[in-house]
Image 1 (cartoon, rainbow, N blue to C red):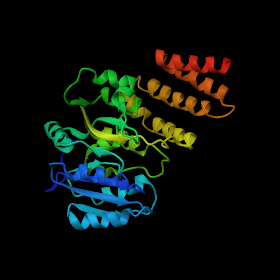
Image 2: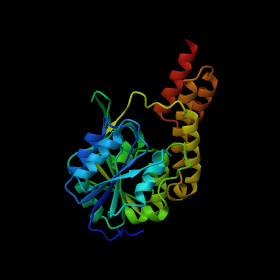
Image 3: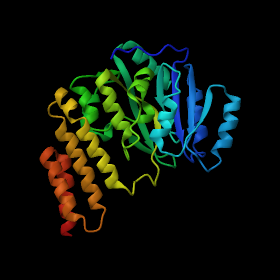
Image 4: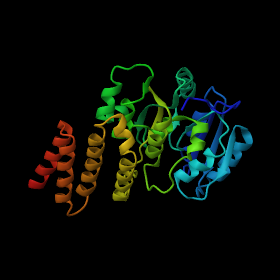
Length: 314
């Protein structure tokens, strides 16, 4: 799909879902309103109980760029979809309420998408931080296959054809870094609210059928890793992951025939880690590790499998 953003005097509609994030909202909001492009900030308060609504109402009274929407506590996908339907900017950007942007994030991205007419989505590198502000490293380096793809690239580059399958192999895109064509987003229907998790990854894969993606290797965003962010519902998350892998397997394999093996190996590694954390899950974890090694016999996968075996011997 050729890049043909909707007619708008606004460059960007920024969508920020929030639920009991009053402690982080001021930094996130300030990082948006200090951007140098024309924008609106659509904040969806998903029925917070921490007094956020008072702070948000005051904010909206002070700055006409801010619009507050009331969510029904149906989850982050529903909250984002509520704002997508009302977005008036040519492009949509997402920012979670506990993350924040660096200066000129949006202007850098707009420059890129305007230079690549076939681009429908841009994403960037980002930094992980803990709750004390400690640096936990950058995103791209965490993903072994994608890190090789971006190695040596200091400017923006395009993902199309086979290289676009890299986002299927590894869920590398940080939602708080995304800039996406508004018209396309509204036409295809936004996030799948039926998925327990990874609805963002699902949406990026869906959008990939409509045009090229561009990547900015500069970091533009700070991402908070909370100490309680490890889910208790690991197997529900894994079920969503498996569903998405199967949903997009055929279109991705048509562009890159060998992309399923590393993607499925990643799923099996995640499954192994889930079983490993459970009492009595040693054998199931071992089987998952072995399947990961069979699909993708890398040093990293075999090392993880061997470590599990040795741990069981002790």
